[in-house]
Image 1: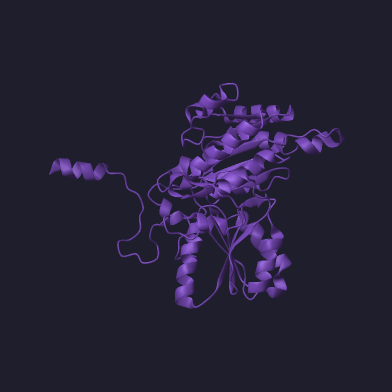
Image 2: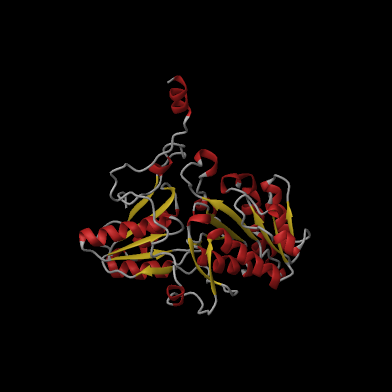
Length: 368
């Protein structure tokens, strides 16, 4: 009896859905319409038409993109903490074996050093793809992003100097049990900085195309990967090299009554909420994936809101001064006369990510 009581008291508590939940239930990634479960679905999408595709999860798609980049351009380097061993999430698995320790290598445990070194490499014409092991640990490198990478082209002016080709990848967002230091979503901090491009993919096929476009971009790119999707999201991904346009949003679903704007993992929650709303409320919802958070595609969003008259912005990061605040302000300014109601924001609460409260801190179906 004592042993059982002690075991129960030591059991780690996690937040979960109620046993009787009807709406807030786990996402079924094997059925969600967001992913391309078949090659036919892939061919009917905006992705490149291809005769060859492979079922990949998100970390495998990132690995595929890095492999293509390393094979096609000898200037590409891949480095970070434990990267030569495959990385914590296995995104760089086997790359050191194929391309050697001069192009794929580990770094000291110094985020500021990793990003500073990457900036120096890019300034000398290389294409460094640096990894920050968790977005939660990027803050020591913030000065390097703001005062070096973002200002480099502006500072060089007519000399033409730039750090294009610089990409800094980082796992981001909640996982259900990451708590204070492994579940943060700091994307809005980077969207305030002119000179940086900030990207967050929603799926394996998007991750591959957007990462290859980021490596080819002439501006430094912060590439934020929703870590909860690394293994959960599996779909058909084109085998060939392809790029998806940066700063271009995608209308994932057409609708006429309300526009939902989101990015990354919350799109799966949005999709589930839309299915419930359209069934129970007899409405038609348009869903937009921003994909690039800065500079973002204002035109696509405004065109949609002018059509529907209503807008809801959804993201996992805190609501205060988040990406949703900028989108909402832009919609109020650019589509005011078309609005039938104020723009709504559904986002994380203004608090730190507590371990047992993590599920309640991020948007769910009933809040949307």
